[in-house]
Length: 146
Image 1 (cartoon, one colour):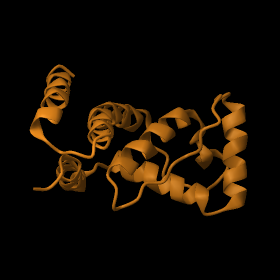
Image 2 (cartoon, helix red, strand yellow):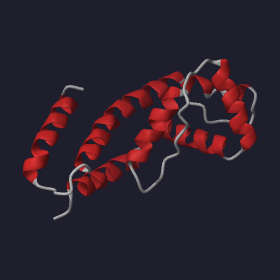
Image 3 (cartoon, helix red, strand yellow):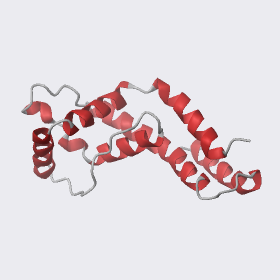
Image 4 (cartoon, one colour):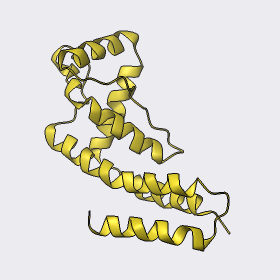
C-alpha cells in the first residue's frame, strides 16, 4: 500500500498541471532575478525602497515537488511590492498585476492546507488509517469552509 504522503503528492502533481499564468509569471520572475547578480542587487534595492522587512529569500520551485510551488508563492508574496523591476529594466516582462497577486494569495491559502497535511503525514513512519483519519477530516472541514 502506498503511503498517504505519496498519494497526496500524486494528487497535487496532477492538479498543478493546470497552473495559471500568475504562477508562471512569478516563476519566471524569480528565475530572471536569480540568473544575474546585478538583477539580484537591483531587486534588493527595490526591497529596501519599498520597505519590505524580511530576511527570507525567494524560493524557486522544482518540477518534482509540488510543495515547492507553495513555498515559492509564499516567499514571493512577501516581496510582491518589490517586483516592479520593469520601471528600470526593459528586459523584465514578468511582473504580475494586482489581480494576479490577489489570485496568487488565494492559491497560496489553498495550497497551505495541503502543505500542512503533507507535513503532518511525514511526521509518522506508519501509514495507518487510524492515525490519519483525524488529520484528513480536520483539513477536509477547513477546505469546505475556506
